[in-house]
Each structure stands twice: as structure tokens, then as C-alpha cells.
Amino acid sequence: MNVLMVTPHLPPHQAANALLPHLLGSGLAARGHSARFFTFGDGPDADGVTYVRRRSRSLRATRIPQALEAAETWWKGGPLVEAADVVHIHSNTWMNQVAARLAARHGKPYLLTHYGTEIWHHDGKDAVFRALNRDARHVTFYSQALLERARALEVPLPASSVVYPPVADGFHPLPPERREEVRRRHGVRGALLLNVKRLHPLADQATLLDAMARVRARRDDVALLVAGTGEKEAELKEQAARLGLDQGAVRFLGLVPNAEVADLQAAADLFVLSSVLEATPTVALEALACETPVVSTDNPGGVELAGLFGDDVRVVPRKDAEALAEAILAFLDAPRRTHGATKDLVAGRFRLDGVVERYLALYREATRP
Image (tube, rainbow, N blue to C red; front, top):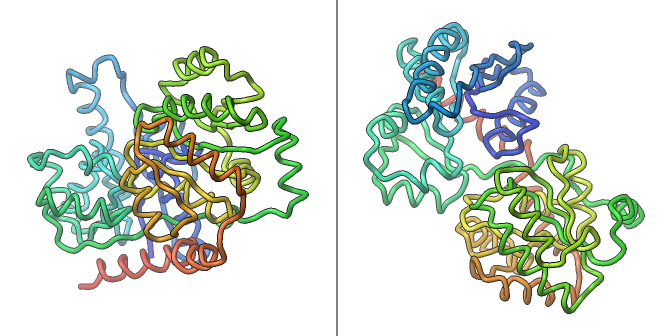
């Protein structure tokens, strides 16, 4: 089967809609299928990847950049769609919408996967977005809460289901000596907290830093590593300095390769998710796959994971630094790894092999006459 993945990002971006298509492509190739990627990027087209160039952000209010991106998508995407058996569209951009129209023009079925923002912020009235959903053969959602939100907005869904994100095989527990090696590499001598997210208002690392100041007031052996980049980076670093959180307390690691993220997830004592909005937070699943418990705010994804994984995911109110700090301190008073049931659930429901098989079944269903 030839699958065209249409997505706004690919690695090294660590957004969910970069990681899922990349992992699916790897899983499909291992089964003798092929995946080609159609994405935004400034480089020359590479083997298996075709790029649409992002235009100037300064003129985006005029819609001129989007129109140019749409024109390039139409020109480059036609041959790609024609060669595909099925098109898999990941989230919603101008490129994705044009690719869906191309699929219809060439009589090719497409699947659509929603990750979060395009549903959380949808007002129920965008006609183009509604058509994008209506004309898909199947629409998958990153979480049950996201699917329920789409239904509440009366988004037209011909067929729909929840397919949780996969956890790559590289995320697994490490033996104690390897955990200590990773911790020493990052200068950590005491307890290690980890946050892996884009530095963005929705990730709300500002509340996490406020909580960390409270934690350090009572436990000066606790360190927080923050992996990710984004528009809030300078502001967050200024906040950390203002709170007296020096390099021994909080370190911003920038964009970290996935293999190193896996080591950090396994080395951490606790993964802390401070986001105000999530569908299914893949980073939290990666921590659980490494036997690292999670403290999360009560964003929809955090609540859903707590329902699945029990007390391996503790939930506290959003934007409440004191509650977050107390949950962290309570865990550090009685540290542990995750329960055996969590390992079994990750293996049975969230590993790549199972997710690839689920999507293969949907691709086959979509291509039936």
C-alpha cells in the first residue's frame, strides 16, 4: 500500500503531528508498505519527502502567504496524490485542506487525524474545516475528550474513532546504573523532575516554575530539566532568574533529540505536565513507558490518562502552583516507579506495532471499492 502523509511538521520538530506520521511511516515500511511525506520546509525535496515553503509571517494577516502556500501545494501535491492509494491528512492547515481537495479531484480516499488545537479552538462554523471532516473516509482523534468535543460542536464525521498516539520503542526503562549515568551527565545529584514541551502559553511552564520555587524552598536537592524551545523561552528564563532558580535548580535544555529525551524520561524521578490544554500528551505516555510516574494538571488529556493509568498519573488543578508543588513534594516523600499494570497497558495499547495495525486496517477499509 502507498500512503501519502500530509503533515505540517516532521522531526526534528517534536509536535505530535510530526511524530505520529514519522512513526507510522517507519512502521509501514517495516511491513513492506511505503509512505511518502508532504510537509512544510525550506530545504530541497529529499528521498520520500516533498516540501512546501512557508511564506513570510509578517504578511499572514493579508492571506497572501497562505495563498502562495496553497498554490504550491496544488502544483506539487497533484502527482503525489495521484500516485497514492490513500492520503492521510494530519491536522488542519492550508496545505492539508488543499491536499484534501486534490484527493477528491483524483478520486483518492483520505483519512484525517485530529490532534487538539484544530478542535479545541473550532467555533463550529468554519465551512472549509467542516467539509474537510465531512469528506474524509474516516476521522481519528488523539483522545476520547477530543472526539466528544467534535461531536458537541456537531462537526460532520462520516466515521470516527479514537486512536491513541504510539510510544516509540526507544522509550523504555533503564537499569539503575544507566539512570545514574544520565543524571550525572546533566549535573543532577538529588531528585530529578522533567518537563518536555514546546515553550508556549498552553504548556504553562510559568506555573511550573512558580511551583518549583515552592519545592526548592523545602527541598534544595530537587532539580528540574525543561526540554523544548518556543516563543516563551526568554520570558521563562527571566522568570527562573527572578525566582532564584539557578542552573542547579532549573535548566533549559532547548530542543533535545528523541533518543536523548528517552534517556531523560527514564532517568527522571517524576514527569511534570503543567499544560492548560492537551488531547493525549504523548510526552506523558513516554514517561509512563519508561516507568516514570506523572503529575499532570487537570487538562483534558491529563484527566483521561489518570482514568487509564490510575495513581501513576496524579492530577492537580490547572494554573495552581501551590497544588502542583504539593503534589510534587508528596511524591518525592515516597518516590517509586510505575506499577506493573501500567507497563502492561502501555505494551498492549500504546506501542507502535498496535497503532500501525490499527491504521493499516483503516487504510484498507478506506480503499475498498
